Image (cartoon, rainbow, N blue to C red; front, side, top):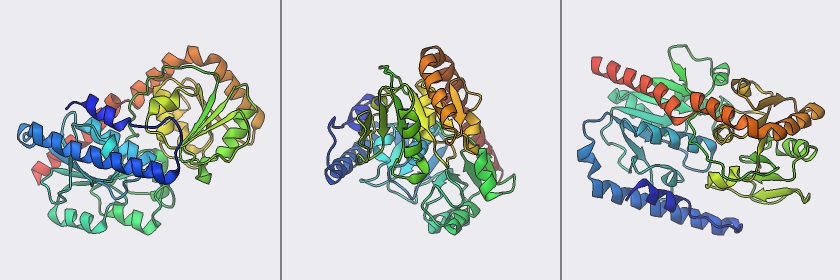
Length: 366
């Protein structure tokens, strides 16, 4: 059983859109199937014996649904598994299961032996308190701000961060919200797996949880329709709320190649972000991006092929879409080079390994 097997399992999908309750049952069935495939793989390879000399990192996340944060944490677990023995606390119906590589050991044992825990902000507080009492090093990975991006109360989020030995932010802009002491947090962007683009069009795309008003899908669509694009592909909408024949609406899609093959310019005018996976994935595919001029997106302004615009300045925004559409072929290589240097698994893993090795040294000295 190799990663290719897991890839085939994970990419089970239907070309036509299905009613939500049917697609949900299909997703749950897939998650259960992959969960037991992981357990079988661990048993057959006797990984517990083969990898016992490696430091152990265990992930414990409270939220196991569909979100960019889930993709980001799964990517992190996968890249760390190249150097460490990585365990992931999960259960059969979890949406994490299809995202984890075969090198990550799925487990349901909350008391498993580990050197470091990595948790999300929604992790159970009793579990975090237990880690604190046991003096087990704990990193809490935070992907939102105090009052947004989690679906949790600000008090719950702050308490999660308080119980961590270190807090991981994915963007500098988060510190403006939490104002932690400098020795309490570190910033490492989300990692993204490279998307290989195989088809080229004359289309624009908008990707994400587009029913969330903060994603500003209507603003992005309005600007894209005023540009020279042939179609506007919307990925992440369970139902079609537009009547324009140039708009093509898609539901949630796990096959990232299918998403990014459908357009050549990303138009993403979100009002509140930190380090969105959609931008990182687009850059990995060499796709130019028109982004809103919010603070979080300033990290991308030096990237070739990225334009930050004010959505209210429609003329400038439309011009940016047209410019990038016309220059997309010449920009492709330099965009991918920028992604490779800043957001690729190799770049992000080097930063994380410095953090993990520092924790291991501190742990030995205790």
